[in-house]
Image (cartoon, rainbow, N blue to C red; front, side, top):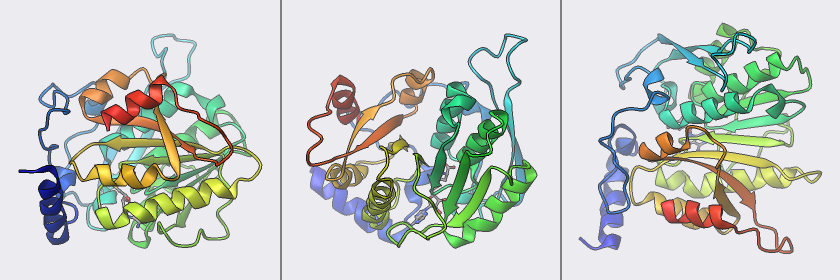
Length: 291
Ligand SMILES: C[S@@+](CC[C@H](N)C(=O)[O-])C[C@H]1O[C@@H](n2cnc3c(N)ncnc32)[C@H](O)[C@@H]1O
């Protein structure tokens, strides 16, 4: 079938069941990686979850790079309530785990003094990890906002309380494409994991990324965007994104190769500025080729 026919078929099937890709393996095409490879040690932290999950608790542990060294701090342990009833975000998704793991590897100094906003947080996993790092840095200035649509807010609040992170993590409703609520400050760091799956939301997500980055007139906002490739239609998202952002793959992630085998790529998005000049480099080219 021709490529554009595939996309048209995808769109029709999406209209019937917008979440159908989330539980399925990507379609095979000649750019796919070895998807039959055994699950990585990173991904195997999560037990298999299904849409029937209701009010369960996962105990996740993220080790820092020198976990074997007795002088190093213990791994970050997160108690995560999962419940599929408020929507697909109520369970933990693999790209969220990869992004969490990367933050832990960067350590507490990475979040120190920063205002961090997570988009489409679902259970809040990534933001909870960032908040735990801020707590370890003993940094009262570092503040993490975990955001999603209204039905997910209760489970996010529950998870903030369960991990005693009220001092560092705030919960807010943020619908992509809508005005950014005034209580949400200009971010230094934006986090997003597994947010590319529903075609009508593509332009809305791009709009919100742009609105948030443009809010920070003082300095360049860093955007970490962890993406799991599931289907060809995701290209449409990157087609829209490239009008406002370029991107480069995060190369210092020790789990990079394993994640890539699972079709997950951790990207750093860079806002296109008319006068900023070209920032393309080899890593950007590689990230483009992968998507
Ligand atoms: C696949 S889940 C990923 C959840 C979480 N980031 C993770 O990795 O486990 C996608 C999330 O995006 C959220 N989302 C989808 N459309 C949205 C919109 N228009 N505005 C805000 N959040 C949205 C969903 O509610 C869901 O929590």
